[in-house]
Image 1 (cartoon, rainbow, N blue to C red):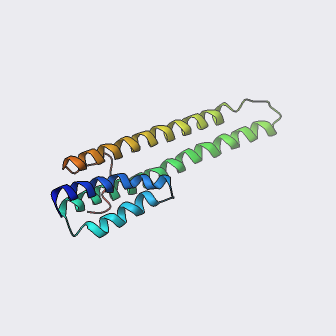
Image 2: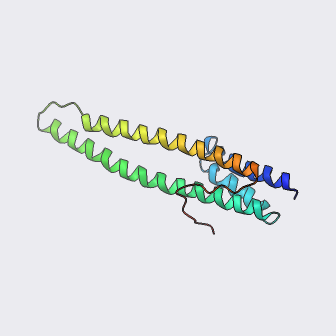
Image 3: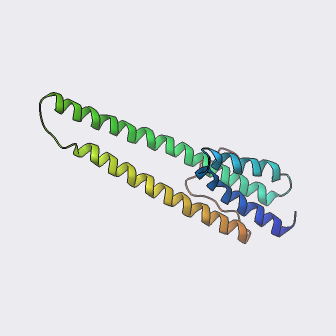
Length: 141
């Protein structure tokens, strides 16, 4: 594999993570397939493939954790609201609204950060370096 082909393949590995916007889990599956088929042809592609797959597995793990935590707060807010309603009180569900605003804010920041990091990874791969994504759990070594 020529150096330019290595850079192009590595950049495509990073960009292929956007496939998740077309099909669920494609952001992990597509880079995994590309990496598995090309890793034996180039050490550079292998390192980039590991970085991409580890990053998106980490994103999945963090997303599940954040969903659980926000879900607990959401359920607690609903229970509090129902309890006050059953007691005959009228209340504006401020805590429920707050959880909704926080959840949407976290989702927005999370999506923007992921988008920026994938673009940075793509640019660095195209320049010839392996981008180490921040806060990545190394599932694949």
